[in-house]
Image 1 (cartoon, rainbow, N blue to C red):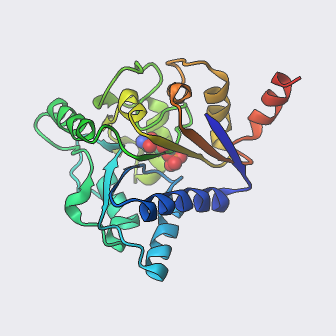
Image 2 (spheres, rainbow, N blue to C red):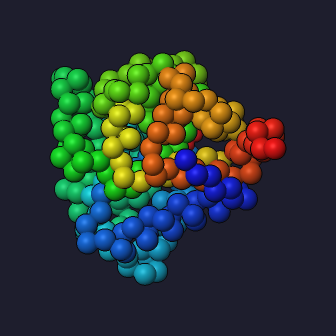
Length: 250
Ligand SMILES: N[C@@H]1[C@@H](O)[C@H](O)[C@@H](COP(=O)(O)O)O[C@@H]1O
């Protein structure tokens, strides 16, 4: 796991957008694993900006989103489906049939999880996976305690995650209690992973991710076993790492 420390949110976003564009421009067909949340918003804006300026084509791009809230329809304003279309898909020329997002409202969510995993299995994992990190160290919606062997599954959200995500909803009780998420085993199938972190709220999670060794209580620490992970953290998110690294290095 390598770390790139950048100054702030803007630099983090530009770095991630730059890597995505390199991938898109350098391949005849590319599969991207995409994340939602506040962290990647500017990254998507920069990709849209690039599209407007340079017409970088997305016709050969296939996307697989990490997760979706359970129990709300895709046209719900807080669904990750809406998030993705508003922030990104509506603004570039990606064919709709290339877009994959788990369905949060189906008669059988477990079946949906299986269907989604099969899609990712078929492509042997995405080429480039973008990740954010939860304040409790979750990736996707893999909450602390989730076995690292899990593939796409249905999960009950912790109270702290529901509270952290409540800012996007009108009321805290509107935040769904469950979600469908790629599992850690699914994420680890990716060929390359970029994890983005910005702000002091993420400092503890970033510290835990680097200092814990493959500990289920810190889901992001699973990434240590992957050969190609780059963490892009801004100064605030990396703040606790500074003292830890200087303690570790002689
Ligand atoms: N499922 C998402 C994660 O994929 C995301 O990384 C995390 C952090 O969100 P934010 O970037 O808003 O801090 O929130 C949610 O729980």
